[in-house]
Length: 366
Ligand SMILES: C[S@@+](CC[C@H](N)C(=O)[O-])C[C@H]1O[C@@H](n2cnc3c(N)ncnc32)[C@H](O)[C@@H]1O
Image 1 (cartoon, rainbow, N blue to C red):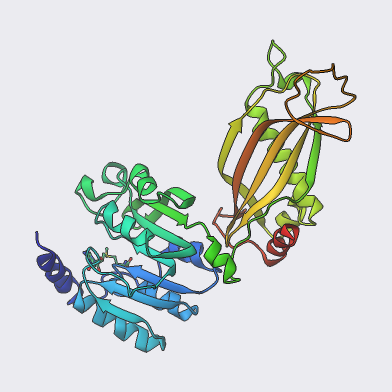
Image 2 (image 1 turned 180 degrees about the vertical axis):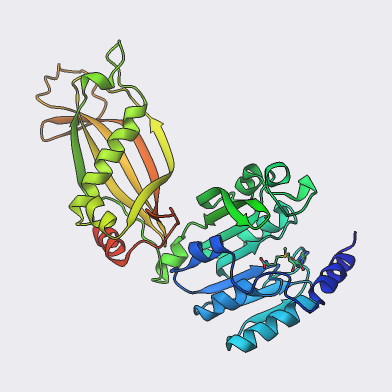
């Protein structure tokens, strides 16, 4: 089927007397994006413009692209009715290019099933810190859900969305259920953010990279954390990061109690862990914590887990692996980077980091 023919089909669908899609935004899109700082948005396959108009009404500067001229006309009329401006473009998203230099804080792809190529192109149009937000019919919807395309090649899979997110930080990837009168539809959703680069930081609008906060969380390896050889089970390294994270957040005045009081939580989304050396029973260790990145809805902490040996009796000529500071020998045992996403406890929707917490994280950056 040619692109032109596709567009004609959509034109005839949009040519009827009634709207094809609701005037209101998709529920997941609305809960995900509500509260984000408004910036430049691109709505790919915008259809009758429900998301473009909604975003524009929230202060976003929106470019909306769809190859159905009839759909775009209906969208334009809707925007006029609401009294918002959107840059409407009739074009095929497989070949359309944004104006040179345009970087979007949000690229929204809602139920546009063209395969991952378009998503891969779209991620290249993100400004530093910008997010690719995708909702589509999940492959599982074909057998267990209602509605949506019947060609499995067009349906969304986690592997496909993950591949499309290459080079981005994945903040959300998974299925959501969309109740319909005829049953539940199964959607797959993705929120993936372009890391902020040095250029963005220089522009002063940036997330934060932190070098060293100086915060250290002390621990003694407990007996139940080791195997029969006395070596720590791998999982405890993540557990210690969790303990250190709680203590760190308290230290910057934004502990869990404060967060929970606002109906929020910070949940772990991604962890990278490199083991360097093993810790053993009853050894003393410290977890150094530093803020590595503060984004809109997520932040990343870096952890260095170090064995600390004191009262070192060094034999002359003995090789010492580690830093000797004030009589303590520190040996790096693991380094970890964990990305946390701010969510509402009720509903588990991703939300922007509250202003107070953001300030605390940024302030700690110094
Ligand atoms: C299922 S509708 C979704 C519309 C809108 N995103 C929403 O959620 O309400 C898919 C839209 O993608 C558009 N579309 C499909 N293929 C396209 C292409 N290659 N280029 C531009 N638009 C396309 C169709 O015209 C249609 O409006």
